[in-house]
Image: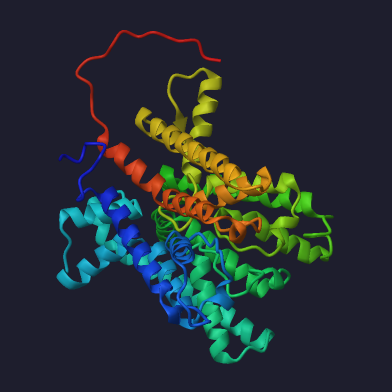
Amino acid sequence: MTPTRFLPSARHPARLVVMGFGAATVLGTVLLMLPFSSEAGEATDPVTALFTATSAVCVTGLVVVDTSTYWSLFGELVILGLIQIGGLGIMTLASLLGLLVARRMGLRMQLVAQTETKSLRLGESKRVVLGVLKMSVAVEVVVAIILTARFAAGYHQPLGQAMYSGIFHAISAYNNAGFALYADSLTRFQTDAWIIVPVMAALVIGGLGFPVIFEVTRSMRRTATRNRTASHWSLHTKITLLTYGVLAVVAVLSITAIEWANPHTLGPLGVPGKLLAGTFAGISPRTAGFNSVDIAGMHPSTLLLTDVLMFIGGGSAGTAGGIKVTTFALLAFVIVTEIRGEPTVHVMGRRLSAMVQRQAITVALLGVGAVMAGTLTLLLLTDFDLDAVLFEVVSAFGTVGLSAGITADLPAAGQILLVALMFVGRLGPITLASALALRERGRRYELPEERPIVG
Protein backbone atom coordinates (compact mmCIF):
# COMPACT_ATOMS: atom_id res chain seq x y z
CA MET A 1 0.00 0.00 0.00
CA THR A 2 1.49 3.33 -1.01
CA PRO A 3 2.04 6.17 1.51
CA THR A 4 -0.39 8.35 -0.41
CA ARG A 5 -3.37 6.28 0.62
CA PHE A 6 -5.54 7.86 3.31
CA LEU A 7 -5.53 4.64 5.32
CA PRO A 8 -1.80 4.06 5.66
CA SER A 9 -0.07 0.78 6.23
CA ALA A 10 1.48 -0.15 9.55
CA ARG A 11 4.76 1.34 8.34
CA HIS A 12 3.26 4.76 7.76
CA PRO A 13 4.75 7.26 10.25
CA ALA A 14 1.33 8.48 11.43
CA ARG A 15 0.16 4.91 12.06
CA LEU A 16 3.34 4.13 13.98
CA VAL A 17 2.80 7.14 16.23
CA VAL A 18 -0.70 5.93 17.09
CA MET A 19 0.51 2.38 17.67
CA GLY A 20 3.33 3.61 19.88
CA PHE A 21 1.11 5.74 22.09
CA GLY A 22 -1.46 2.96 22.20
CA ALA A 23 1.14 0.43 23.34
CA ALA A 24 2.40 2.79 26.06
CA THR A 25 -1.17 3.35 27.27
CA VAL A 26 -1.87 -0.39 27.47
CA LEU A 27 1.38 -1.03 29.32
CA GLY A 28 0.67 1.80 31.75
CA THR A 29 -2.83 0.51 32.38
CA VAL A 30 -1.55 -2.97 33.21
CA LEU A 31 1.11 -1.61 35.58
CA LEU A 32 -1.36 0.69 37.37
CA MET A 33 -3.78 -2.22 37.86
CA LEU A 34 -1.19 -4.11 39.92
CA PRO A 35 -1.91 -4.20 43.67
CA PHE A 36 1.36 -2.54 44.67
CA SER A 37 0.59 0.46 42.43
CA SER A 38 -2.06 1.67 44.87
CA GLU A 39 -1.44 2.94 48.39
CA ALA A 40 -4.02 0.50 49.77
CA GLY A 41 -2.25 -2.48 48.19
CA GLU A 42 -5.36 -3.48 46.24
CA ALA A 43 -5.81 -3.96 42.51
CA THR A 44 -7.14 -0.88 40.72
CA ASP A 45 -10.22 -1.22 38.55
CA PRO A 46 -9.52 -1.17 34.79
CA VAL A 47 -11.37 2.10 34.08
CA THR A 48 -9.42 4.06 36.69
CA ALA A 49 -6.12 2.56 35.54
CA LEU A 50 -6.92 3.18 31.87
CA PHE A 51 -8.03 6.76 32.53
CA THR A 52 -4.89 7.58 34.53
CA ALA A 53 -2.54 5.91 32.05
CA THR A 54 -4.14 7.69 29.09
CA SER A 55 -4.06 11.01 30.92
CA ALA A 56 -0.35 10.52 31.65
CA VAL A 57 0.71 9.31 28.18
CA CYS A 58 -1.33 12.06 26.53
CA VAL A 59 0.13 14.54 29.06
CA THR A 60 -3.33 15.73 30.04
CA GLY A 61 -3.56 15.71 33.83
CA LEU A 62 -7.22 14.87 34.32
CA VAL A 63 -7.63 12.41 37.20
CA VAL A 64 -10.40 10.35 38.72
CA VAL A 65 -8.48 9.67 41.95
CA ASP A 66 -6.11 11.86 43.92
CA THR A 67 -2.58 11.18 42.70
CA SER A 68 -0.77 11.66 46.02
CA THR A 69 -3.11 9.65 48.23
CA TYR A 70 -4.38 6.88 45.95
CA TRP A 71 -1.20 5.79 44.18
CA SER A 72 1.83 4.29 45.89
CA LEU A 73 5.38 5.42 45.15
CA PHE A 74 5.56 2.77 42.44
CA GLY A 75 2.30 3.99 40.93
CA GLU A 76 3.51 7.59 40.95
CA LEU A 77 6.76 6.56 39.26
CA VAL A 78 4.77 4.72 36.57
CA ILE A 79 2.74 7.89 36.00
CA LEU A 80 5.92 9.97 35.86
CA GLY A 81 7.44 7.60 33.33
CA LEU A 82 4.33 7.71 31.17
CA ILE A 83 4.39 11.52 31.27
CA GLN A 84 7.99 11.58 30.12
CA ILE A 85 7.29 9.08 27.34
CA GLY A 86 4.25 11.02 26.20
CA GLY A 87 6.08 14.33 26.28
CA LEU A 88 9.14 13.24 24.35
CA GLY A 89 7.04 11.18 21.96
CA ILE A 90 7.08 7.44 21.48
CA MET A 91 8.62 7.75 18.06
CA THR A 92 11.32 10.17 19.23
CA LEU A 93 12.40 7.67 21.85
CA ALA A 94 12.35 4.85 19.32
CA SER A 95 14.48 6.90 16.92
CA LEU A 96 16.94 7.73 19.69
CA LEU A 97 17.22 4.06 20.61
CA GLY A 98 17.90 3.14 17.01
CA LEU A 99 20.55 5.85 16.82
CA LEU A 100 22.33 4.71 19.96
CA VAL A 101 22.30 1.03 19.02
CA ALA A 102 22.92 1.10 15.28
CA ARG A 103 24.53 4.57 15.04
CA ARG A 104 22.31 5.15 12.06
CA MET A 105 18.65 5.39 11.15
CA GLY A 106 16.94 4.05 8.10
CA LEU A 107 14.53 6.05 5.98
CA ARG A 108 11.44 4.75 7.74
CA MET A 109 12.73 5.61 11.23
CA GLN A 110 13.71 9.09 10.08
CA LEU A 111 10.20 9.62 8.71
CA VAL A 112 8.80 8.43 12.03
CA ALA A 113 10.96 10.92 13.89
CA GLN A 114 9.78 13.68 11.59
CA THR A 115 6.13 12.87 12.21
CA GLU A 116 6.52 13.44 15.92
CA THR A 117 9.03 16.29 15.92
CA LYS A 118 7.99 18.01 12.69
CA SER A 119 11.61 18.18 11.53
CA LEU A 120 11.65 20.01 8.21
CA ARG A 121 14.61 18.20 6.71
CA LEU A 122 15.03 14.46 6.53
CA GLY A 123 18.76 14.61 7.18
CA GLU A 124 18.27 16.57 10.42
CA SER A 125 16.40 13.78 12.21
CA LYS A 126 19.38 12.69 14.27
CA ARG A 127 20.09 16.20 15.43
CA VAL A 128 16.43 16.82 16.18
CA VAL A 129 16.05 13.69 18.30
CA LEU A 130 19.18 14.45 20.32
CA GLY A 131 18.20 18.11 20.55
CA VAL A 132 14.78 17.23 21.97
CA LEU A 133 16.37 15.03 24.59
CA LYS A 134 19.03 17.57 25.56
CA MET A 135 16.55 20.44 25.82
CA SER A 136 14.10 18.36 27.83
CA VAL A 137 16.73 17.21 30.32
CA ALA A 138 18.20 20.71 30.66
CA VAL A 139 14.88 22.42 31.36
CA GLU A 140 13.67 19.70 33.72
CA VAL A 141 16.92 19.68 35.69
CA VAL A 142 17.01 23.46 36.14
CA VAL A 143 13.36 23.67 37.19
CA ALA A 144 13.75 20.65 39.49
CA ILE A 145 16.71 22.27 41.26
CA ILE A 146 14.79 25.49 41.85
CA LEU A 147 11.67 23.71 43.09
CA THR A 148 13.69 21.36 45.30
CA ALA A 149 15.48 24.27 46.94
CA ARG A 150 12.20 26.08 47.53
CA PHE A 151 10.39 23.04 48.94
CA ALA A 152 13.30 22.35 51.28
CA ALA A 153 14.04 25.90 52.40
CA GLY A 154 10.61 27.50 52.22
CA TYR A 155 8.40 24.63 53.33
CA HIS A 156 10.86 22.66 55.46
CA GLN A 157 10.38 19.42 53.56
CA PRO A 158 13.04 16.73 54.12
CA LEU A 159 15.63 16.81 51.36
CA GLY A 160 14.50 13.48 49.86
CA GLN A 161 10.88 14.54 49.79
CA ALA A 162 11.78 17.97 48.40
CA MET A 163 13.86 16.40 45.62
CA TYR A 164 11.11 13.96 44.66
CA SER A 165 8.47 16.70 44.64
CA GLY A 166 10.74 19.03 42.68
CA ILE A 167 11.58 16.41 40.04
CA PHE A 168 7.97 15.25 39.73
CA HIS A 169 6.54 18.73 39.21
CA ALA A 170 9.39 19.79 36.91
CA ILE A 171 8.75 16.87 34.57
CA SER A 172 5.00 17.37 34.80
CA ALA A 173 5.34 21.10 34.05
CA TYR A 174 7.74 20.82 31.10
CA ASN A 175 5.60 18.10 29.51
CA ASN A 176 2.45 20.17 30.12
CA ALA A 177 1.00 17.19 31.99
CA GLY A 178 -0.62 18.96 34.94
CA PHE A 179 -0.20 16.07 37.37
CA ALA A 180 0.52 17.33 40.89
CA LEU A 181 1.30 15.66 44.20
CA TYR A 182 -1.18 17.92 45.98
CA ALA A 183 -4.95 17.52 45.95
CA ASP A 184 -5.41 21.25 45.26
CA SER A 185 -2.84 21.25 42.44
CA LEU A 186 -0.72 24.39 43.06
CA THR A 187 -3.37 26.45 44.86
CA ARG A 188 -1.41 26.42 48.12
CA PHE A 189 1.50 28.05 46.28
CA GLN A 190 -0.57 30.65 44.38
CA THR A 191 1.40 33.62 45.79
CA ASP A 192 4.82 31.92 45.86
CA ALA A 193 6.75 33.18 42.83
CA TRP A 194 9.59 30.71 43.50
CA ILE A 195 7.15 27.89 42.69
CA ILE A 196 4.80 29.48 40.17
CA VAL A 197 7.34 31.25 37.94
CA PRO A 198 9.62 28.21 37.27
CA VAL A 199 6.55 26.08 36.56
CA MET A 200 5.25 28.71 34.13
CA ALA A 201 8.62 28.96 32.40
CA ALA A 202 8.78 25.17 31.97
CA LEU A 203 5.29 24.86 30.54
CA VAL A 204 5.85 27.75 28.11
CA ILE A 205 9.13 26.29 26.83
CA GLY A 206 7.58 22.86 26.44
CA GLY A 207 4.43 24.29 24.91
CA LEU A 208 6.18 26.35 22.23
CA GLY A 209 7.73 23.26 20.68
CA PHE A 210 11.27 22.17 19.94
CA PRO A 211 11.51 23.62 16.38
CA VAL A 212 10.74 27.11 17.71
CA ILE A 213 13.06 26.90 20.70
CA PHE A 214 15.85 25.42 18.56
CA GLU A 215 15.52 28.12 15.92
CA VAL A 216 15.36 30.95 18.45
CA THR A 217 18.41 29.76 20.38
CA ARG A 218 20.35 29.15 17.17
CA SER A 219 19.40 32.61 15.94
CA MET A 220 20.53 34.15 19.22
CA ARG A 221 23.92 32.48 18.90
CA ARG A 222 24.32 33.63 15.31
CA THR A 223 23.12 37.12 16.13
CA ALA A 224 25.85 37.33 18.75
CA THR A 225 28.37 36.66 15.97
CA ARG A 226 26.53 39.07 13.61
CA ASN A 227 25.71 36.34 11.14
CA ARG A 228 21.94 36.26 11.42
CA THR A 229 19.07 38.16 13.00
CA ALA A 230 15.52 37.33 14.04
CA SER A 231 14.30 38.50 10.63
CA HIS A 232 15.61 35.21 9.24
CA TRP A 233 13.33 33.11 11.41
CA SER A 234 11.11 30.68 9.56
CA LEU A 235 7.47 31.55 9.01
CA HIS A 236 6.47 28.80 11.47
CA THR A 237 8.56 30.34 14.26
CA LYS A 238 7.29 33.86 13.58
CA ILE A 239 3.65 32.77 13.55
CA THR A 240 4.03 30.63 16.68
CA LEU A 241 5.76 33.31 18.76
CA LEU A 242 3.44 36.10 17.62
CA THR A 243 0.21 34.16 18.13
CA TYR A 244 1.33 32.56 21.39
CA GLY A 245 2.37 35.94 22.75
CA VAL A 246 -0.80 37.78 21.71
CA LEU A 247 -3.06 35.07 23.11
CA ALA A 248 -1.06 35.00 26.36
CA VAL A 249 -1.35 38.76 26.87
CA VAL A 250 -5.07 38.79 26.05
CA ALA A 251 -5.72 35.81 28.33
CA VAL A 252 -3.76 37.16 31.29
CA LEU A 253 -5.30 40.64 31.12
CA SER A 254 -8.84 39.33 30.58
CA ILE A 255 -8.82 36.65 33.27
CA THR A 256 -7.13 38.92 35.82
CA ALA A 257 -9.66 41.70 35.16
CA ILE A 258 -12.69 39.40 35.31
CA GLU A 259 -11.57 37.55 38.45
CA TRP A 260 -10.03 40.56 40.24
CA ALA A 261 -12.84 40.94 42.77
CA ASN A 262 -14.18 37.36 42.68
CA PRO A 263 -14.21 36.19 46.32
CA HIS A 264 -13.75 32.57 45.19
CA THR A 265 -10.58 33.17 43.15
CA LEU A 266 -8.46 36.34 43.14
CA GLY A 267 -10.59 38.48 45.46
CA PRO A 268 -8.95 37.60 48.81
CA LEU A 269 -5.38 38.07 47.50
CA GLY A 270 -3.24 41.18 47.62
CA VAL A 271 -2.27 43.01 44.44
CA PRO A 272 1.02 41.08 43.88
CA GLY A 273 -0.79 37.79 44.55
CA LYS A 274 -3.62 38.70 42.18
CA LEU A 275 -1.17 39.55 39.40
CA LEU A 276 0.80 36.32 39.89
CA ALA A 277 -2.27 34.08 40.16
CA GLY A 278 -3.97 35.88 37.24
CA THR A 279 -0.90 35.45 35.06
CA PHE A 280 -0.73 31.75 35.88
CA ALA A 281 -4.46 31.35 35.18
CA GLY A 282 -3.92 32.92 31.75
CA ILE A 283 -0.87 30.84 30.85
CA SER A 284 -1.89 27.45 32.24
CA PRO A 285 -4.72 26.73 29.76
CA ARG A 286 -2.10 26.54 26.97
CA THR A 287 -2.10 23.41 27.97
CA ALA A 288 -0.43 22.94 31.33
CA GLY A 289 -3.29 21.70 33.47
CA PHE A 290 -2.03 23.15 36.75
CA ASN A 291 -4.26 25.58 38.59
CA SER A 292 -3.51 28.01 41.41
CA VAL A 293 -7.13 29.15 41.88
CA ASP A 294 -10.37 27.21 42.22
CA ILE A 295 -11.66 26.46 38.72
CA ALA A 296 -15.18 25.78 39.96
CA GLY A 297 -15.29 29.24 41.53
CA MET A 298 -14.47 31.09 38.30
CA HIS A 299 -16.94 33.38 36.56
CA PRO A 300 -18.76 31.73 33.61
CA SER A 301 -17.12 34.18 31.18
CA THR A 302 -13.71 33.09 32.46
CA LEU A 303 -14.63 29.46 31.94
CA LEU A 304 -15.67 30.19 28.35
CA LEU A 305 -12.45 32.10 27.66
CA THR A 306 -10.48 29.22 29.17
CA ASP A 307 -12.38 26.82 26.89
CA VAL A 308 -11.19 28.79 23.87
CA LEU A 309 -7.59 28.87 25.10
CA MET A 310 -7.59 25.13 25.81
CA PHE A 311 -9.00 24.35 22.37
CA ILE A 312 -6.32 26.43 20.62
CA GLY A 313 -3.51 24.96 22.71
CA GLY A 314 0.20 25.62 22.16
CA GLY A 315 2.87 25.24 19.50
CA SER A 316 3.34 22.39 17.06
CA ALA A 317 5.86 19.67 17.97
CA GLY A 318 5.62 20.69 21.60
CA THR A 319 4.16 19.07 24.68
CA ALA A 320 0.98 21.15 24.49
CA GLY A 321 -2.23 19.92 22.89
CA GLY A 322 -5.14 21.61 21.12
CA ILE A 323 -5.40 22.40 17.43
CA LYS A 324 -2.17 24.45 17.84
CA VAL A 325 -1.61 28.20 17.59
CA THR A 326 -0.35 27.92 14.01
CA THR A 327 -3.65 26.38 12.89
CA PHE A 328 -5.56 29.15 14.66
CA ALA A 329 -3.35 31.85 13.14
CA LEU A 330 -3.63 30.40 9.63
CA LEU A 331 -7.43 30.50 9.87
CA ALA A 332 -7.24 34.14 10.99
CA PHE A 333 -5.01 35.00 8.02
CA VAL A 334 -7.43 33.28 5.64
CA ILE A 335 -10.35 35.29 7.07
CA VAL A 336 -8.47 38.59 6.78
CA THR A 337 -7.49 37.79 3.19
CA GLU A 338 -11.08 36.94 2.28
CA ILE A 339 -12.37 40.15 3.87
CA ARG A 340 -9.84 42.14 1.84
CA GLY A 341 -10.92 40.35 -1.33
CA GLU A 342 -7.40 39.20 -2.15
CA PRO A 343 -6.93 36.03 -4.23
CA THR A 344 -4.06 34.51 -2.22
CA VAL A 345 -3.01 34.52 1.44
CA HIS A 346 0.22 36.40 2.13
CA VAL A 347 1.78 36.28 5.61
CA MET A 348 4.99 38.01 6.67
CA GLY A 349 6.47 38.09 3.21
CA ARG A 350 5.39 34.56 2.28
CA ARG A 351 2.45 33.09 0.36
CA LEU A 352 0.50 30.25 1.96
CA SER A 353 -0.31 27.33 -0.27
CA ALA A 354 -3.90 26.21 -0.71
CA MET A 355 -2.93 22.82 0.71
CA VAL A 356 -1.84 24.35 4.05
CA GLN A 357 -5.06 26.34 4.25
CA ARG A 358 -7.18 23.23 3.66
CA GLN A 359 -5.23 21.33 6.30
CA ALA A 360 -5.81 24.07 8.87
CA ILE A 361 -9.52 24.21 8.12
CA THR A 362 -9.81 20.41 8.29
CA VAL A 363 -7.98 20.10 11.61
CA ALA A 364 -9.98 22.93 13.19
CA LEU A 365 -13.40 21.75 12.01
CA LEU A 366 -12.79 18.14 12.98
CA GLY A 367 -11.65 19.41 16.39
CA VAL A 368 -14.88 21.37 16.76
CA GLY A 369 -16.82 18.29 15.73
CA ALA A 370 -15.06 16.12 18.32
CA VAL A 371 -15.76 18.64 21.09
CA MET A 372 -19.41 19.04 20.11
CA ALA A 373 -19.99 15.29 19.86
CA GLY A 374 -18.26 14.69 23.20
CA THR A 375 -20.21 17.46 24.92
CA LEU A 376 -23.56 16.25 23.60
CA THR A 377 -22.82 12.66 24.61
CA LEU A 378 -21.70 13.64 28.10
CA LEU A 379 -24.80 15.80 28.58
CA LEU A 380 -26.94 12.78 27.72
CA LEU A 381 -25.00 10.57 30.15
CA THR A 382 -25.00 12.94 33.13
CA ASP A 383 -26.99 15.68 34.85
CA PHE A 384 -24.17 18.23 34.97
CA ASP A 385 -24.53 21.75 33.59
CA LEU A 386 -23.32 22.69 30.13
CA ASP A 387 -20.54 24.93 31.49
CA ALA A 388 -18.94 22.10 33.46
CA VAL A 389 -19.42 19.47 30.76
CA LEU A 390 -18.05 21.65 27.97
CA PHE A 391 -15.07 22.62 30.15
CA GLU A 392 -14.26 18.99 30.88
CA VAL A 393 -14.60 17.90 27.25
CA VAL A 394 -12.43 20.72 25.90
CA SER A 395 -9.86 20.06 28.62
CA ALA A 396 -9.69 16.41 27.58
CA PHE A 397 -9.51 17.12 23.84
CA GLY A 398 -6.92 19.85 24.35
CA THR A 399 -4.96 17.53 26.70
CA VAL A 400 -4.99 20.31 29.29
CA GLY A 401 -6.07 18.68 32.54
CA LEU A 402 -7.91 21.59 34.12
CA SER A 403 -11.15 20.38 35.65
CA ALA A 404 -14.41 21.84 36.84
CA GLY A 405 -14.43 19.10 39.47
CA ILE A 406 -16.77 16.60 37.81
CA THR A 407 -14.34 14.03 36.36
CA ALA A 408 -14.35 11.71 39.35
CA ASP A 409 -18.17 11.82 39.51
CA LEU A 410 -18.71 10.82 35.89
CA PRO A 411 -20.06 7.33 35.16
CA ALA A 412 -17.70 4.77 33.65
CA ALA A 413 -19.06 5.48 30.16
CA GLY A 414 -18.35 9.19 30.60
CA GLN A 415 -14.80 8.49 31.74
CA ILE A 416 -14.20 6.21 28.77
CA LEU A 417 -15.46 9.02 26.53
CA LEU A 418 -12.88 11.38 28.03
CA VAL A 419 -10.21 8.71 27.49
CA ALA A 420 -11.08 8.64 23.79
CA LEU A 421 -11.06 12.44 23.61
CA MET A 422 -7.64 12.63 25.27
CA PHE A 423 -6.20 10.11 22.84
CA VAL A 424 -7.74 11.80 19.81
CA GLY A 425 -6.76 15.24 21.05
CA ARG A 426 -3.13 14.25 21.59
CA LEU A 427 -2.64 12.33 18.35
CA GLY A 428 -5.38 13.64 16.07
CA PRO A 429 -3.77 16.89 14.85
CA ILE A 430 -0.38 15.15 14.41
CA THR A 431 -1.60 12.13 12.48
CA LEU A 432 -4.28 13.99 10.53
CA ALA A 433 -1.90 16.68 9.29
CA SER A 434 0.68 14.04 8.35
CA ALA A 435 -1.88 11.91 6.54
CA LEU A 436 -3.26 14.88 4.63
CA ALA A 437 0.20 16.03 3.60
CA LEU A 438 1.25 12.59 2.38
CA ARG A 439 -2.04 12.08 0.58
CA GLU A 440 -1.69 15.23 -1.52
CA ARG A 441 -1.82 14.41 -5.22
CA GLY A 442 -2.66 16.17 -8.44
CA ARG A 443 -5.75 15.79 -10.61
CA ARG A 444 -5.66 14.62 -14.20
CA TYR A 445 -8.62 16.85 -15.05
CA GLU A 446 -10.87 19.53 -13.52
CA LEU A 447 -14.69 19.67 -13.60
CA PRO A 448 -16.63 22.78 -14.70
CA GLU A 449 -16.68 25.50 -12.04
CA GLU A 450 -19.91 26.58 -10.38
CA ARG A 451 -20.40 28.94 -7.42
CA PRO A 452 -23.07 28.06 -4.81
CA ILE A 453 -24.62 30.73 -2.57
CA VAL A 454 -22.60 31.32 0.60
CA GLY A 455 -24.17 32.92 3.65
